[in-house]
Length: 236
Ligand code: ATP
Image 1: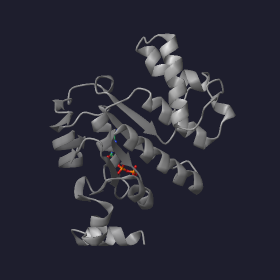
Image 2: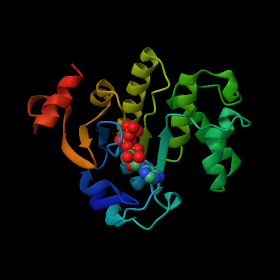
Image 3: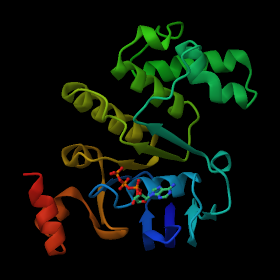
Image 4: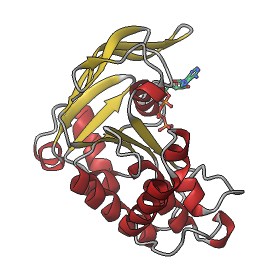
């Protein structure tokens, strides 16, 4: 469903990703793990259309999207910083994408209320960003993505600004909604336990190469290399 074929990405003379092949089946949640600087965020930005590959092609739903912009890819991103507009109410934040698409006001209002209910924030439409907690802001960011019913959801360290308890409940919420709507998702994190809790498959990268991809259990039981064995061991 989301496919990278022979993708290489260079910044100047620095080869950040080399000849990457990756296929994520429809409805799967794949988490990217690996040492700092290994290229995780770059993979996400390539899928989003925020960067162009130096070589190789990217496909979504069987279509070659390599030359399309983020607006033409039917994708939403959820970031570590929630990137909400402070001068707009939460309802206006969530409905912003639909407003840009020219949807009627009554439809926007109904869909905003539905989206707020999905993230357990019924009745919050008229509040402002500075009146809610960080965890609630991240829920609003999630609602803002879900309301657009994207084909693909991309998460870049979405929970790293939250405390441990909130992280746990938010990652369960993200997983529940991702499964409910069957949205193909890529999730970048530093947190191995988070990765294992939210995903169908974990993809471990090192220095721009894929070291192994598989279910969390498979990576534990059958690490494919010495790197993988020590990488998996570090978290224990
Ligand atoms: P982290 O876990 O620290 O966020 P990462 O695995 O997400 O790291 P990337 O952010 O993808 O890694 O970066 C991979 C490499 O690409 C790094 O060496 C980084 O310096 C380089 N890089 C990323 N973006 C750019 C850019 N716009 N210009 C030049 N180099 C870049």
